[in-house]
Image (cartoon, rainbow, N blue to C red):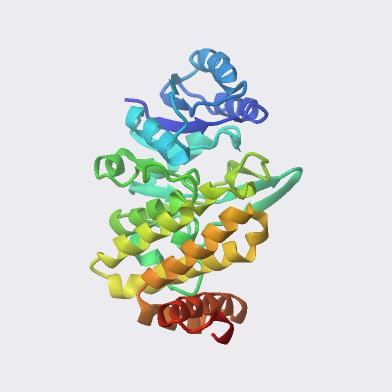
Length: 333
């Protein structure tokens, strides 16, 4: 069994894949496994991966997997999880990279702590600018119950730092069904994932370890493209609400889930001009329907605690729903 499996999906990243693969080589060990998943790229990425896999196989264990159809990041990660054989697992995206020696430090830390998973800070790379992004939980190097770090509802917490590649995970989480992603989600795939992990895993720790470089501003990234795939955040957060509502501590945890969902809806509505007109209409309609599905009494409480700009946006959306149901003209709402 490899000590660590690194799952790396690639899709049309010919410009960045060489940096990613070079960083893997700088972290390679004979007991490390690199699971490279090509999600049906249409550029030169497959050829780059073919050459790199041959080179990497000299210093580590390598699995190169090609999808027959493009399935998106969540599906590609699941493919990697199904193939990975490591005692520990981590992720990396095909346009990001790692500092030399980072993976060894990561494995050493999780082995010493003996917990289900660990989380780390990361560096956001935008062109030549570098910004340190810290995990919201301040206590470092101590084993904690992840459920205890979901709250408070009105502050940034562990579930607001969803990046799958910012940490490492013991194989027992795979065996318990806690590491796979919701199939087919094109965006926000890590939101239901991080919530499930924190509700159901037993132990975790946050490390003072830096080594992941997250590339922002990539033109092909879904965060830069205003098409319908971005609307998958609705399905992702519906899942968060539904699963949290079934939790034995639903009364305690649901306010955080609803507040986060509202904040994300307000964020997307605030950037609605970046979407194509037809997608913008879909966004308004789907957001209104999502507001309607939320527990209404809890929604009202959440809106009372949000800042004026976001709460006003969401209240207007909520009033349109009410007006539509009662037949009141929108102008009078």
